[in-house]
Amino acid sequence: MSSRLQLCVPCPQHSYTNQESSTVCPCERNYFRSPLDSPSTSCTRPPSAPRNLVYSMKQTTLILEWNTPVDTGGRGDITYNIFCDKCSVAFQQCEACGSSIGYVPQQTGLVDRTVTLVNLFPHVNYTIRVESVNGVSDFSLYANEFAE
Image 1 (cartoon, helix red, strand yellow):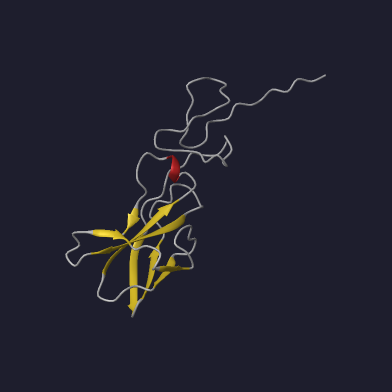
Image 2 (cartoon, one colour):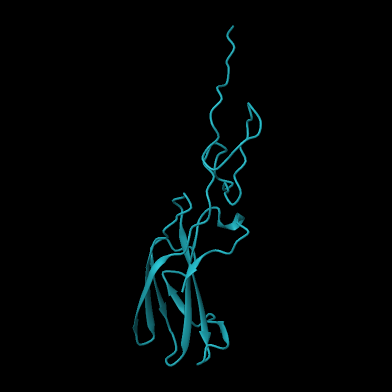
């Protein structure tokens, strides 16, 4: 009969323990694990904003492109969400664009770094935000970062 000893290993990156032989390493402040992450996975954080947002406009169609965030938060599951507001001439009052605007391929959960907005109205001011999120963004107390 043999006995098996479990070997101690250091806590994953951005986690800690205050006890010797601990089986759990909680995440450091502002770092998180997704429910899909194993306890041995490093703790990660939400990404920074997308970079270098550029657009081209043709009649009632707007094509947006951007680069990945400088800080991915240590994760590879970054997706992007698009928010659209139409605003008064002086940008003093804005409201959500609503369902009249189309997003190709979609408005949320974008994996590729490009989106096309269709059915925009001529002579209307729009504010478009591109938000970057990852598998732990929902756990942060801070707002997701975006480019505008």
